[in-house]
Image (cartoon, rainbow, N blue to C red; front, top):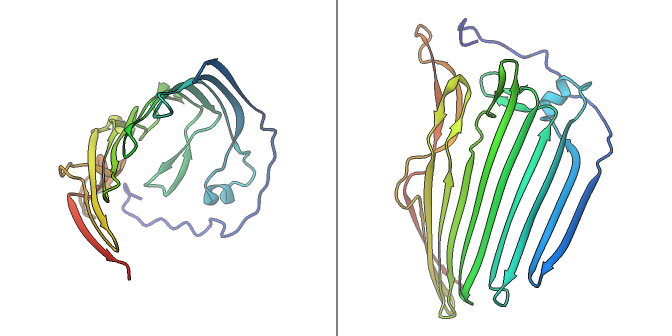
Length: 262
């Protein structure tokens, strides 16, 4: 326990358990052709989300978490199939939201939650040996708390991926990939910063020889692989501090591979 500086053993947790449940999961999907190459789609469904095995074993009497969601969007494909553009608006409701508590070492129920999101997808191949792809995700999350509604901890409101790829008949292969993760809100009123990381892969294939250069985090961006907000004590006699506990992401690294097939 961080506040009493005492070790807490969870020996009473069950080592094995059996539980089962059933439910009706209706779903609906519809596609309507608006124009040549342009479709309108609609999806609706209700299902369940499995809880972590350790939590389910400790409380086998709890019913599964149910999720209800809906999505409406459109997809356009044109220019001989070289261009694909899609966008959708979706909504999801969970009757119980479980969030991992790193101090407790398990998932904790935090109430009902709502998610409202927008997704955009672009695929374009200007020539047969080169392509561009972009995915954009905007998500608004709300968690019902006793004091009111708040954002779901550790969920970014913005996600984006970008890819530019080349696979030339001469043997040249290359791609530049970027990923953007927006700021994440946490408990204790804290926020982790956004980041954009770029990876590069370049290679050349000639007969039985393949040479590939892989660079991760091309611009040596500071980013966090995992972030949690909980109190810590640096030393047994020290004070308890509230803050973000992070796992640093991969820094700049380069790898050169040579493959010879005999």
